[in-house]
Amino acid sequence: MKKTLLLIILSVSTLVASAQVTVEAAIDSIEMLIGEQVHVTVTATMKEDSKAEFPVFKPTQQLIPGVEVLKSTEMGTRGKDGGFVDRQVVYTLTSFDDTLYYLPPFVVKVDGKPYESKSLALKVVGIEVDTTRVDQFFGPKDVQDNPFLWSDWSLLFWLSVLMLVLMAVGYYLYMRLRDNKPIITHIRIVKRLLPHQKAMKEIEQIKADKMQNAEDPKEYYTKLTDTLRKYIEDRYGFNAMEMTSSEIIERLEKALTDDTKDATMMKAELRQLFTTADLVKFAKYSTMINENDANLVSAIDFINQTKLENMPTEETVKPELTEADQRTVKTRRVLKSVIALITVVCVVLLAYVFYGLYQLLN
Image 1 (cartoon, rainbow, N blue to C red):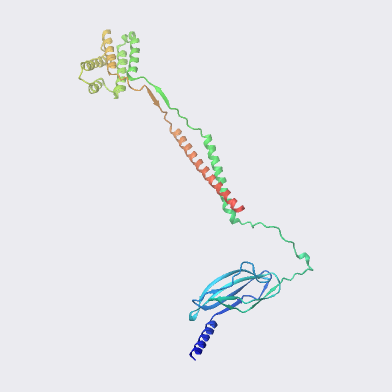
Image 2: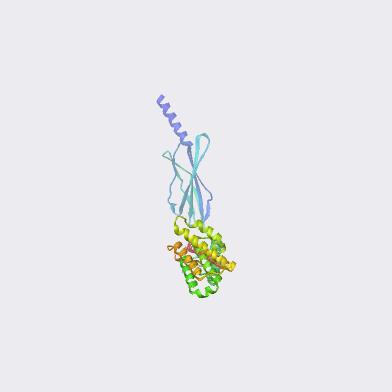
């Protein structure tokens, strides 16, 4: 008796659980034109922890002869009351035969047990063609190109225009650069005489004019002291040409060492020479020929004892540009920089335009 009652309870529980699982199929339109598409939504209602297996179709696989399944889309799960959920799958169908189709039930397995939906009907309607008006029909069209869209080409067009403008500006600047002749400067290496060599060369000229100088002692001592002043200026670096004789002797007192007899004698002779020269030039002092010769020898001895022979004999002379030449050099430098920049920009634009054309045409 107890076993019989238990079997009855289990059977009723199984029937109740089975009744709680439902599978429904709904079609969005029971009628369509040839080649159109309809959608069949299959909904499985089941417990939340149940597993459902919906029918699986490959693309263009036929559901029945004449009806193809294009694709199936999983719509997800939607919760319901009492711990139940709805799970939906949408099947997209099409057909190319005008007839009435009966779609078989969709079978969904829930926890391994199959459940069927109801059957559906689908009517495919053909398009009526008036064969008596053949002139209204046209043959098949040839292969058509993609439509021209200005938005696809506008950027490349304006970049091309910009590139042409930059090329024109670059050409104009190039012509300006070509017409604007460069400033060519030459650095010269000038060989120059050492201070003592120049001084001795001028003293040789004074000695050659001895008879003429004897008649005019003022001119003689002027030439001799000017030669010594130039030598002292080049040798010791102070402006002896603008200084008085006493100022020169005072500066030489600091420059010459007093630790030798020759230095002391040399300064005394030099002081005597400048003193005699001042008397001749400003006090009309008359000198003897031997006195002139002695002063000339004193000048030569001073030069020989103070000369520097290890000084460079060559000098690099860099020409100084005028203000106009400097502006010309600066202008040419700016033109070259701008032309180089324009060239780089044009190359980049050209590469980008060709790449864009390749993308659009392929």
